[in-house]
Length: 281
Image 1 (spheres, helix red, strand yellow):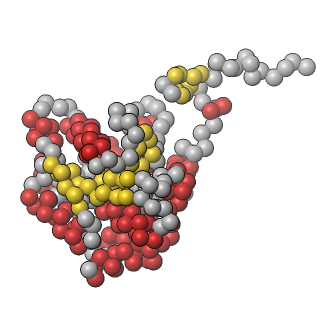
Image 2 (image 1 turned 45 degrees about the vertical axis):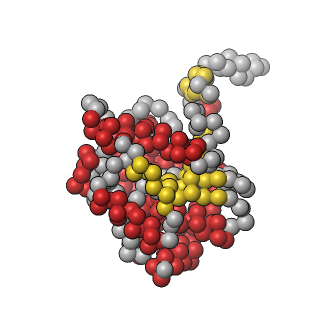
């Protein structure tokens, strides 16, 4: 109980500016939580999702908006060590964890996939939507943070040949009435790491069977890792690079874009080019 109170106090007091303020700002800026919402808060076992759970709990205790929250962990086939680790952390932090079982790891390991991580992520998302539906929740809260957002922005450009970002909320295409929200959208990973370390907390990073030995470390092999290092390098020359990337997706000038898509319809600057031509005097 003492540990739980210290962790909660640190969010509201010690890291009020870096974490709590930006958490609340995200909720307000993007209208993420409304009166009467039933929210399924997803806990993967990592630092981000556990912080999200604690922020949601604090919002329920001290906020003016009334909503329900279910703190849910999907077990895709964890080994017993990782399963116990997640449950112990939830107990220590006072989070009423609801765990539901799936066979995702078995399905992925038995298939021949060029990108098992992508397939695993797709399966996880489907199971989460189904679980939210079974709990009659209208929103699913995920622990993606500021750094995830700017990394996704560059990933789409460098590897996907398109300009798009990770959205703060979006409607499910296949599960009507369910929204996915990201309340830590403006919380930087650096602040989350300092919060974790200051409270002497340890969380799992990777519990996948494909990387079985890395339960408490990062594998560092993904394209996202490359982008993270790229941003780190750029930061040496421009300390505002993170902020600039983030704000760029709030400040898109369509008058200076060759082509873009709107509701799956492709638009071109040529469509109205002649119409916009200034009159000849």
